[in-house]
Image (cartoon, rainbow, N blue to C red; front, side):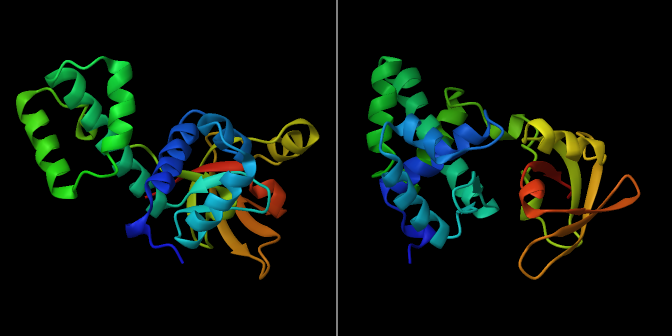
Length: 217
């Protein structure tokens, strides 16, 4: 089993790409990852198996890919290292941005954690570092409704299905901005009992997977 603390450079690249795609798209699919990395879907599927074993991503069979909280944290740190190196190469050394991107990809996987932390501290102290995450509100955690446990609650942010499937959900009151709470889940994960707008609803797993929820803290 792959350990999250011992990921290969290639696995870290996968996490970073999944994070980037998840911030731009409603769902991340194997074809999206393959296209971004310019590799075969079979290679992506194999890598995802390793990431799932490490508890960094989740995926229903042939469905969208989601970062777990642990995976999102890891991916964010990978991106932080990358941006710090790009900033150092461009802002301090004056390297062409296109070259800096390529070199940063090579460097980020071999530089030690101690050196990276010292580098980031230096860049921040001199005002030449990447945009600090602390200057912006933290990103809200979102996940499909199937990723919530009984008792969890949140706010619907989008419904990713289309056609009659989408219309049925909207007609039941599952609309963006609505608060929703998971009341119970059947032993095999299907169906899922929820409360929304004061009503109790029973959703099939396939329907719940299309409901993206911002987790209440």
